[in-house]
Image (tube, rainbow, N blue to C red):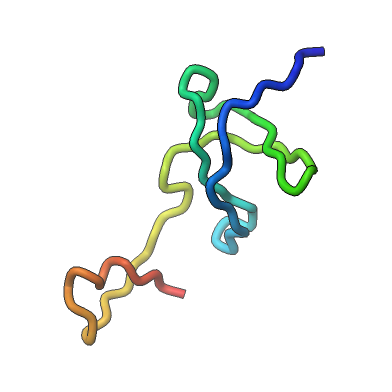
Amino acid sequence: SEKARVIGKVSSGTYSPNIGKFIGMACLDKDYAKIGDEVSVEVRGKLYKAEITKFPFVSIKTKKLKHFPPAYSGAIKEV
């Protein structure tokens, strides 16, 4: 059995209702983490399988609001 190697640290995570899965962001050692690799992520002492993907993992739809200045219109997600 191969010994586990720490290749990074999760910086944030949440449940995504858009794709019906948990998602997260992490800082990873590029020498050990490639797009498409399967890794284990430890959350509160429990290991979960995860896949390394490119950003964004979901298509983002934005809604332009008339009362916000144009610089902020793209930052509002449609819900």
